[in-house]
Image (cartoon, rainbow, N blue to C red; front, side, top):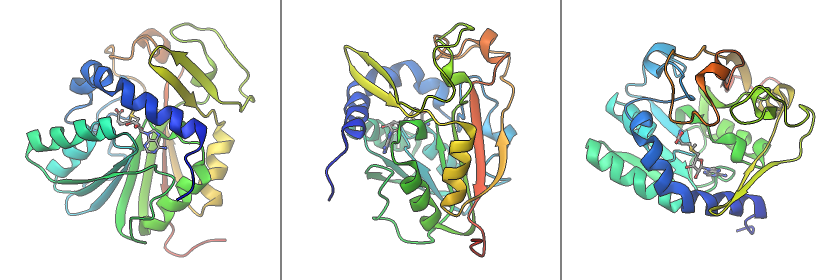
Length: 255
Ligand SMILES: C[S@@+](CC[C@H](N)C(=O)[O-])C[C@H]1O[C@@H](n2cnc3c(N)ncnc32)[C@H](O)[C@@H]1O
């Protein structure tokens, strides 16, 4: 096994340290839905994952506290969740037990899905996690590998335009073109976010053989969210806070 890169380790340790506080603040809002982003409309309206997940094999990439995984299992999907934080997974296991559903959880970085078989999922998705992942091409390559031909992949992250603004206010903090990681350090540790432009995300997806079918920027619901320090409603009504990408593994690999 290759050694854990320093940024991955910093993020994993930070998630382990902050998991309890994170779940305390956000658990209720994350429950009973796939929350694609702060103040985003619910999945039952957006249908990013398609009209139904019933009977489908679904992989959640960086599943956190398991709320989305449990919700999809309740809809009749066979769900697997991968996350590198043992603390987040402890919450996830307790959560699915409380919901009386079955979800398979795997503790791993999402850059290495070798424990999963080729072509074994109809849907893979991730809500607000892939900006923490350093080797995004390797991750997308793994996702493409485990998806069946024609399988759907969707993920959300902070919009690249939003990521260059200061928290809570209408001011720029850095250049859109600056790809150096955005680092937040406080008493709980260090969080490393990998800034990618729209073109960077697009190329990382397409160069690994996925075909992008949509970029969704839903307008926020008229209600505040529990991330209002970063995503106050007043601001995300003016600039999209969240981008949702939708892609497919083609039936025949187009080179
Ligand atoms: C914001 S949560 C996403 C889960 C859920 N959708 C939510 O919003 O709470 C981010 C999750 O990504 C996980 N994560 C970040 N980088 C990861 C990596 N390289 N491999 C596996 N999990 C990762 C963290 O442990 C955390 O549980």
